[in-house]
Amino acid sequence: MLIQKNKTINSPLGPSDLFCNMSGSTAFRVIETYKNIRTSLMFTLSAGDDNTVLITSAEPNSGKSVTSANLSLSFAQTNAKVLLIDCDMRNASQQKIFGIDNTVGLSNVLGMMTTFDEAVKRGVKENLDILTAGQVPPNPSELLGSENMLALLNAVKEKYDFVFLDCPPVEYVSDTSSLLLHVPQTIIIARQNHAVYGEVIHTVESVKNVGGKILGAILTDVREANKSYSYAAGTYSHYGRYGYGRYGNYSKRYGKRYGYGRYGYGYGRYGYGAKTSSHSKSSNKEESKK
Image (cartoon, rainbow, N blue to C red; front, side, top):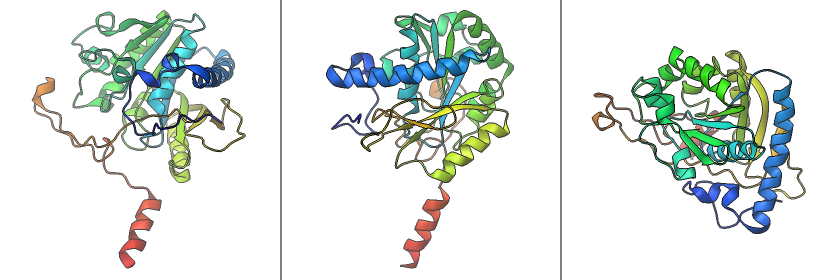
C-alpha cells in the first residue's frame, strides 16, 4: 500500500512531489509504480504512430499535474527524449512542481509573441524538456484548438520521442475538448473517494464524442491495502497517494497586468467556473428541506 503520511491531496505543489526528490522506501515504491505504468503505456503506444498523450481528469484536485510530471520523468529515464507541455493555462502547475520560470510559455508561443525554442525549458531533468503554460490569456480554449497549436504539435512530434500534455479537467472548461481535436490519445486521472462516478463516465463519453481515444485511466489517492499497482488500458489502475493536484480558490481576475488587454475572468471556486455535480445538488436540496 503506497501512502505518504502527513501530506494531503490539496497541499501546495512543489519539487517534493517528484519521485526523484523522494527518499527511502517511499521513493522505491513510487518509482516502481511509475515504471509499471510506463511499461504498459509503451506497449499501448507502440501499436500506433502517435507519440503524443493528453492527460486530463473529470474534476480538479485529482492529481493530474503530478501524474503528468512523474510520468514524463519516468519516460525520460529510459533515455527517450521527452517534452512535457503544461496546457492548463488557467491554472498552471508544472513551474511549481519543477521550480522553473513561467514568464513565457505555451500561451506566448501560440500568441506568436515568442518561438518554441525561446520558450521551452531544456534539460530541466535529464532527457526532459518542459514548455510551461505561460501568461494567462483571455482565450485558452481558442488557442488550444488553433492552427498554431496544431503546427506546434506537428513540430515537436518530430523532435521528441514522447510528448505529454497536462490539460484542464474536461468537465469544467472547453479547453481540453478543443485540444482533443489535435491530440486524441487520452489518459484520465481520477482520485479515489473524490471523483463522482457519473462525472468520470461523462468525461469518458465527452472524450469519445470529439474523437478521443481512451488509452487508460489512473486512480490516485488509493488507500485500500492489497491492491495491485499498474496501468491498465480501459480500466483503473492504482498507484498510491501521490496525486497532489491543487486548484483551491482561483476566482482571480486576470486583466491588463498580463499584457492581454482588458479582460477579466472569474473561474469559480475551482478555477474553472461554477460546476456542481448532480450528487451535490441533490444533497443541497435535502439539506434545505431539513
